[in-house]
Image (cartoon, rainbow, N blue to C red; front, side, top):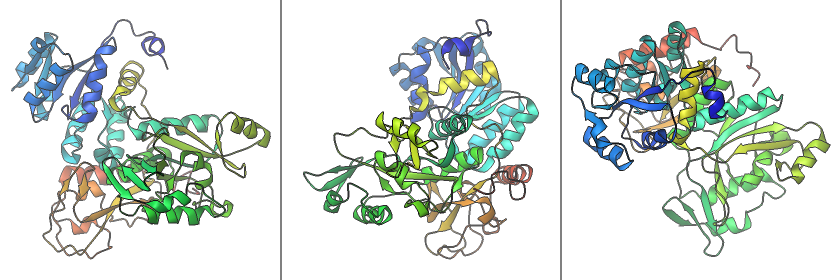
Length: 469
């Protein structure tokens, strides 16, 4: 979709947005891109450190004279009315001025939910960046959006929205999708000259990879050997599980295994890796959502946290023609991988904002359902009284392993991971056990109500049209 299509029939209207978590990395990429797009402007920006936020905006080229730190609703309203940008530390002040759409990017389950709920019930659109919020309250927020005639949407530039869009495109074309997913955040870069593998800023020896750069005659054995060679590096980020939960909710594709497969794979191998087991691949069943760790050499392009679909091929002549043009087709010709090797964070998000406000269209699914549950298993024995702290870059929950359960495999009292976050255990939980609602002594009441309400209205246990997946 180009700008002419986005603005067609909308006059000269400028779309104004509010942004929570405005001092974060995702927010910066959106704020950096906004001045390059006509008729899109920030109105109210919320972050706990407003002075640091102001410094960032000046660094990005915003006029310092039009940035005003505001402490009360009247000041916020007056600032926006004058055409300046209101900077606030309190999320309750977001609603004090008119704007069209909230970009929620705090990453805080409780705070993000409260801001999104307030926006939707006031008849304003929401673009949800905080997957932590969506994994608990997304179904309820979708209900609120429907009831108030506004859009609740994932945000272009984040992997969930990009993957949902790719799936929608593939389904529109009638492609027979077997698996969908993304690469993990950081590639595994193998240097044959040194026998080492690097992930971001960590380098470890992995000389075995030199003999494992092709799948060979037994792909599953090769993948197992690769995994063993890189055990010194972390895999399975909580953020990956959370993003795939959002994708499952919006597409109906669900995990093949609760810890996901996380194969160490090269891009050209994806069609072989994500084949069914009877065809030599990893999958026990079709309809899987998964994450892989991209293995590459230093001079090869990155997958860049991009997204993919793997489809069954149809006419063999068609797909051999496409193989000849460089497309990724499995060695037996039965599967093909189609992928987008990028996600540009907030640089892409303006498409979501303009589409929602000007055309009433979400970026991604239009009918989310309870297809999967982002849950947690205790990594060790956790005694009653333990506070399940959330922190770190990936918003891990201390002492808890994230898992993604198919809805039908999740006990009815399973606690969503980010409802458990910051809660206190009211009883002992043994290593390996799922955290349940009954284990939480002080679950956030509003989030709990959102979870139970959304599940009640959008369950798939008995009516899921994709239950065979």
